[in-house]
Figure 1: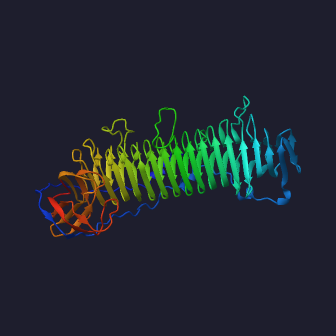
Figure 2: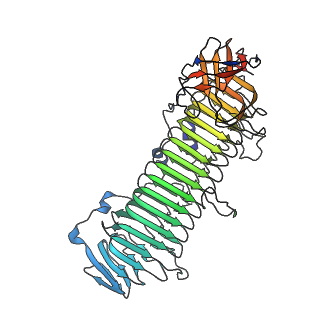
Amino acid sequence: MSRNAIVVLVSLVVAVWAAGAGCGDATPESTGPLVGPFSTASVACHEEGVNQDPFTVSDALALNGADHEDPADYAWNSADVVPIAFAGSAITIGGAGATASGSTLTITAGGTYSISGTLNDGQIVVNAKGALVRLVLNGMTITKSGDAAIFVSKASKAVIELAGGTVNRVTDGTTYPAGVDQNAAVFSKTNLSIHGEGVLVVTGRYADGITSKDGLVIDGGHITVNAVDDGIRGKDYLVVRAGTIDVTAGGDALKSDEDVDATLGYVLITGGSITGTSGDDGIQAQTDVLITGGTVALRAGGGSSATVTDTAVSSKGVDAGVAIVVDGGTIDVDAADDGFNSSGIVVINGGTTTVASGDDGIHGDSTLVINAGDVSVTKSYEGIENTLADMTFNGGRIHVVSTDDGINLAGNGDADPDVPTGDYTLRINAGRIVSAADGDGLDANGHIVMNGGCVIVNGPTNGDNGAIDYHGTFRMNGGLLVAAGSAEQAEAPGASSTQYSVLLTLPWNSQPGTLIHIQSQAGVGVLDFAPAKAFRSLAFSSPALANATTYNVYLGGTATGTPIDGLYEGAAFADGTLVQSITISGIVTH
């Protein structure tokens, strides 16, 4: 199956929803006296996911080549182990399958080799074509002044086993001989696995720390890498299933860069604890970054407060050429550039994701879907942005803080925000979305369709932007929408909606935390909301709004209970000022 089929598969999860039509006129009234108390009906903010067939990591892996790991690789008979001891520049070998020449140990046959001691300016070379070789690092230190310290040249597979209770150190040289292929302290030309319960400290003084020219699987150990360039690199794929990994890299922290075979070049994380500090990207994959579990903390390019001045440098938290798919795990990104960036799709099905970025928090160039999980963009230029395809929210709890647009369907890659080049849709089916933006809170250079869920928008406070901004249509068919901001560019859902909406322009600017209360003249409350930013307008839509019903709007006062994202549910309201009355006379009332 073509890798382009990913976009087709993901598009199957996006439902097409019908909408109705109609329009109405506003009937505002003048401000009134202090009033209260009133009882407020419960205002539910339903967040339950609606997607039944999400595109998952398993689906993405079905389009990729399988990794090489086999549990049998980590099992051996202790009676067959060949002991090897280092002592300065001397090497003692206690069995067949290996030879020593000066301070170079060469392994020529398959088997299991236990290595201990300190080797100065030496090297381990594996040259066992077609054989499985296990290197059990059992309290070993090795340095090499002019090449890789561990060099797997030929083998069917190589395993580095970290013996429990031991600390093992590997350091390469600052210069390498001209014409050699290797460029890492631990360098393998074949599939490499790292396993065990011991400690491995790798210092890559020339370029990379750990590199495999084929696949690399990490399934255990406490691994610390400090590298001039990339920290840990598997050309065909990099798979992390377990272990504690701490990487400091001048280039990318974790990387897979196979660019010929479209089924390779992926990074898969299913467990373990990863900390990456990088000059370039935290995780960089030619094709996919796939995460199902574990804990990942990335700081790229100096973090979100840093400035990227070199256009040739990429300082993204997670960067993928085809897809980013998150099924679970805990991910914390602090990046000078985008937090998440995919040249293809982004799909989040679960887990906890926290992003602080100097540019976009989460960016996709093709379909972007959030089905579940906790997503917090705590700092960004634009919070969640997608270009040249639809963006869909099917569930989850999403919080966004941005200096420009909060949720942005760019439509044309921001080439001209006033001229959309595609018929794209921002679709909200379920979930809780909270946007605090200095630019537009909810922005689409195309269409918006909201069928359910809860959207809360705080800001902007400047008149050049609006809490809601769209260039096509906005069909409001279900869910709760509360968008408070400045009045100059304020918009409401459109006339093709099937659920009633109102757009209020209030008589004065209100300070952050000022309560706005709406209730029917019969005393049934439909909203208690305290915006986090100053506001002059409110766009509001709820299933509780009824046609031909007059609602009174109050500012100030108090409400009982504890608000969630400024929204009270089941509160008792008192002591507000009546500022407006509005009668629902059509699908949208201004």
